[in-house]
Length: 141
Length: 277
Image (cartoon, rainbow over all chains, first blue to last red; front, side, top):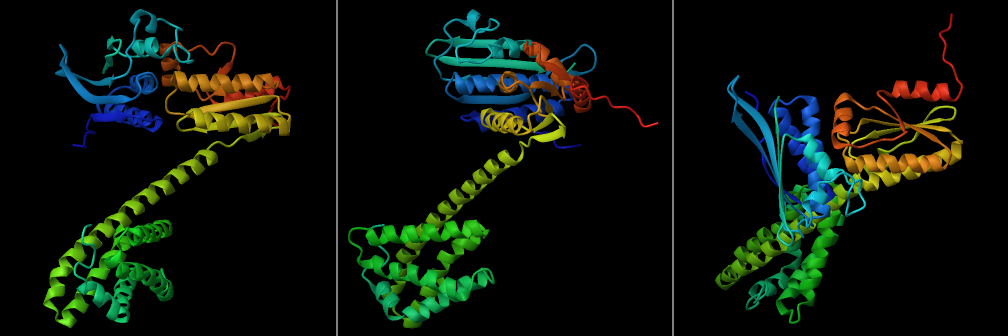
């Protein structure tokens, strides 16, 4: 039995931290048995959202964990869940933020809507002045 | 550190009267640890300076001597860190003075000095922490410097053919890296007058919107200088992720492998590759 990488909570305060979140997401996704394509998808989504937390949220944390859910076929299905949270200014207009091509910071405007398409479950919890929490989950197929 | 190292001054007096003996012992103890990597003379000079300050700490009213002592220790641990000494080898340089002083106290048989020794010992421990902190900070600096050097090393621009440049990218592509890549690519374009450039991202683990934006900017800048850019090394998982994110590379030519890209660039510059019969 090989040692499984442990999940955990990482701070996001610099661009190096974004890389660390990405690496942890990749090792957990690989350990969960995800295909290379799905690994790349969750890692890329993690990269987008971690950078959003840093750039727009003013820094925060990312909790990366392995999750499981019952499957009708064989036992349980594994997945990776990442929760990004910050105490930043929050998002005033969620529909606009999720719209394609809209950016408040000079990017391509694809980060949030793109990340949503790359994962299986996407939950955005925000309120102006109260910070933002984004939860994403990717399941093994 | 109220009371300083000396307390009522027995240890300070001892430090003054037995200077040669204590210093000899201190040097010997430290020399045992750093064997061969520092000459006895260098070490002696270093420790003599520290010893002088240590002996004066007793009547240090405004804290200047203490400040000097900390500065001297910081300097010592910085140079140790640069020379590759281990943290314990660095710290022992300070802690060994306790052993040397204790032996001197034992020899003198002064019971009052023993009591003072506890306070002196705590003071030296405090100094030890200073060396430790400086050592750690210096090592961090060394790592940061190396990361920067690596950054420059890892972004070469190579000539693939007459008029065709190659930019193999490996690792994370952040803003700083992109800036270096762009600068060296544009500079090479001017120097070689190349009309084609192949940016290979086989070694880039993940292409997110930021990386894509950096790539697009680099291609645009090269275009403004009249160079055609091809992006190669797009692996299946990267291609699917780019589509998922909704990134569009527009009319930029992309290829799966560096070989495809080179063939394309050769073709565009009118070179045909044929097998020798």
